Image 1: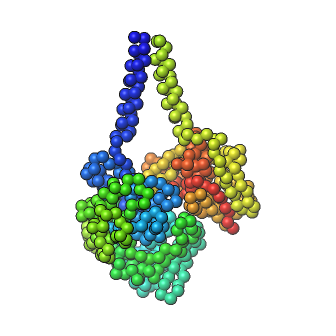
Image 2: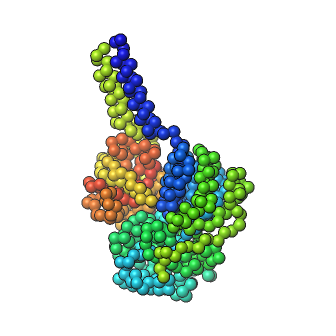
Length: 360
Length: 182
């Protein structure tokens, strides 16, 4: 009888420990999805929908810049089930053949100029005069650091493409070059141009604001501390912002204009990642998804990818303001059996965007 | 036997407290790493040699690309500028390259080495100035040696007496080389 209190206490302790353990580990399978930062809102919805259809799965979403997302697998060697990037070229360039050998293109985007009703000249800015408005002395605008964010170097590409499209060789100088010390210079070689970003990119006045990414710039825009920021259209729409739609010849959205886009490039000031060089070339923006070869839950990962590229998944993305394209696989022969039928090998065109928030 | 219950409870509390006191599970004597400093000359410091340098402390945290906040933490380490001074110091036009063992690189200006960063309030995420921010090479976070999962054993941290946040790009993890370039 003397041992009874000890036995009871041990049992109670065991029950408490077991309860805590079960609460922390409700026997759900964790699916690790690492995705591009610009997908954070639509993929939060994808997580919700996928989990509701798969009650035994806990999807762990983690957003990064696309290169950092790939590095989670290649350099940092984390166990990732599904990888989603905002530049489809990164997967073959950084992962083939050791870490992956196929990807599916499933979404797109375009560069816009986001603003609010409080932005100076909000009532008059449009797709024809935006670069003149931005150059006005009383207008402040921002873009993300090209060294740190794809949207940043894509902004420099837009400014270069604008010079040709509007036949005005002062646009890059007036918007970008003259606002930095040391400057962002332009190298011209025939009909191609390259923006050369200095090692340290520092604005020389308050007219231009550089931040590491969208999160900071959107906050400044909403506080009225800047008037405009270059941004992806999907992100602008998801934050309820107004935006100027740029012509497809310069907004990096159109496969029809790929040859034009390829005439511009950006040389980054230093090699931030050993695994990726400093040259970025203009390309249409396509998002791609893959399953790394060492994914811990390949079958579940396959189900998630199937969901993302399914009609239902594409519908979820579109509802969240993320434009999609019919899924296209680059290496169907290497894909898991279940996916081969879900993606074609033909080049797809972007679906039309809704016009609900577009600047008229 | 009446003592058995309190003894058992004390044991449970002791086990829990032990886990809390050493969340990183790392003992100082287990850590082996070298830090290479390159400037006017080159020096290689062991972890123990770094720990022997006069330390600095402060609070700071960072946020990721998608705005997820980490910290603020209680950070302890050595001043980045002090480390640069060990190999000749930094001039106004120099830059400092912080390299990591995973192939990551970030470049700092002299002003940044001295704490010139945009800083954010952890509660509102608004940009707010902070007094005397300092850049350190951190080896202790919240009282424990920095684990590899947290970017250890050596990681850049931007701290001050206030609780501040800075962009996560600058909190270089797994630092192994600091190079001053003219």
